[in-house]
Image (cartoon, rainbow, N blue to C red; front, side, top):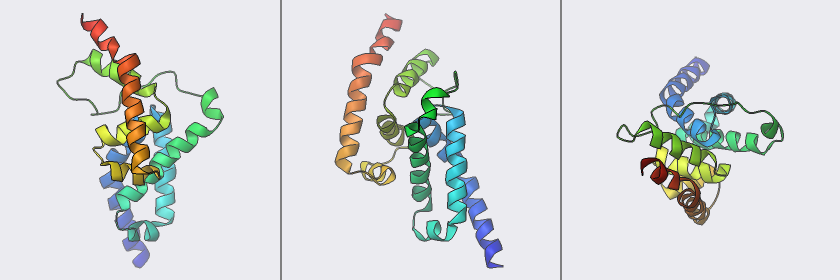
Length: 170
């Protein structure tokens, strides 16, 4: 009976968090296939150790960290440089309705060009609205590292890519 209760509890957790976790994984990975693989792996690990995950106090934060680590670990492996999807759409419901489609595409391409850890910081901050402390916990780094990664990412976007927005609307 206890096992069935835990299964039901995990099922409820999965259903409640999957969409947000997918958005995060997609934002960090930049493609649907990698995001789905990371989610599958992280949720399988979370299910296998659900008692420990649940006892952590913040199961969603715990699993978010697992998901982001799965994406970043995949990026470190050599096969990633050889096998990549040719294209993919923007993350679902990630952009504001008032921003034009062209601007969203330019911004998203610019974000995708960032190194994975910088992209992870921006996605967690601006798509998921996490605090610096929560981002640091998710990535397993210090708040100073989060700040420096965010600063470097925003500087790179300003310097190289977002100037494209001005050129398209001149």
